[in-house]
Image (cartoon, rainbow over all chains, first blue to last red):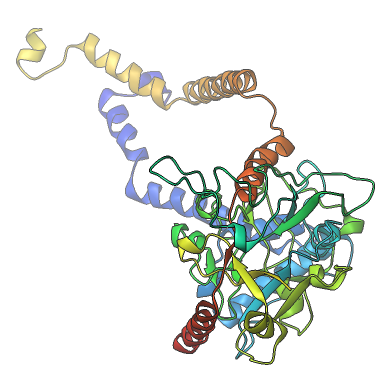
Length: 344
Length: 104
């Protein structure tokens, strides 16, 4: 019987019959099965590291909440992906903080000659983007030398009531209020200049951790503030909150050439980052948790940088705190930075 | 109208309903809908892309990075160094050690 010749009752019955519960469940079942099969095919592909990573990494937990097994899986996945992407055997360490260690850093601003070797060693060690953008975690600000003495710090106040500018309105006791970190002199130190390196202060009470809405950045027991790059949503709250301007943001896909990639990485440290996540200095935890110095300490030609365990009274950092004239930045914020500046 | 009043449909109305049901279930009408849907989605996408290309210039990641970082130079350079007194240094170390023990 052709459709045209069907009786009205038959047609009316046939319409709703198509939309039965059985039919719906059958279709839903087919769709679900197809989705699962597709996902499984994508995940089990052996030649597409990217596909594997995107599926598994997108659905992984916050690193802190992972079980040891999940951490292991995540690390293995990354090792495989990085090894394929960069064409060299890459290790992703997940060593936790060492017991009885609280890292501290001290920098002698009298000794720094502004060579910026620390900046470049840091870039190399920590797999930072090389160009567009060129990301650097350390900035060495060049400043004009003033007659910076503590004796002069209290001088220059207006005698009567009036506007006071930094306490030195009438007598310049410190530095001029200009600074730049992209200087390219023929040789350093330049006459009349001094240099002021800055990086993450690994605050004991870090404002960046407080503001993170997804708890992807947190303070480790050894005092290092870390970021789980996979959990970061790129909201840039931490960047705004950091009073030391120490965090950097990956506006674009980082540009890390294969030949420049450092294959010795840590999950919370120098492993290659992705677009849209924040990053910063981690005191080279891939090194320091293995008992080594940071790259910047190692490379400094004048020994201006010191690093050690703040819990150990015999460590260099503790000795400096005890014996030297130590300075803090933005002490009023009570962030308790564990990065100190000192002079002899 | 009389048919409606009595709850029955006239032959003409019934045939219209039949045609509609037939039309909505036929393969031809299904493909027609799919085609229209695809065309609509495609056109929307194309317009959105053209608009975005026009309104949003190509991202300059280096500039964006510098815009983040460079303002910090002047601010950092204007800070005062605050020398710690001996008592402050001792208190700081004490606090850090106590804090570590408390969390351990």
